[in-house]
Image (cartoon, rainbow, N blue to C red):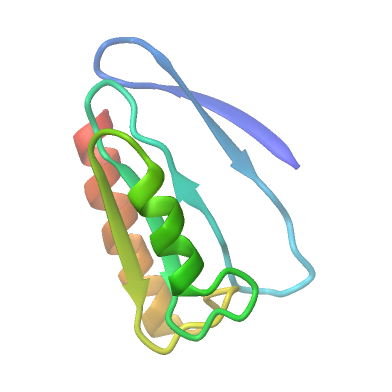
Length: 99
C-alpha cells in the first residue's frame, strides 16, 4: 500500500492511500473532509461486505458536513465502467472543493 500526501488550499497535508488489488479495475474508499469540506461515503447498492444500511448507520453517526453516495447496482469493488465514471465525478467534485 502506498501513502501519498497532497496539500489543500490552506497548505494542510491530506493523506491519500493507494492500495493495489489483483483485479485490473476497481476501488473502494471513504474520503474524509478537511478544512471545511464534507466527508464523502461511497457504497455500492449491491455491496454485500459494506451494505448501504450499514453505511447509513455510519453516516448518521458522523458529525459535521457529510454526503452519502450510493452507486446504483454497484458491488463492493466498483468494477463496472459506469460505476467508476460516477465515482470519478464524485471524487473530482470533492478534490475541487478541498484543493
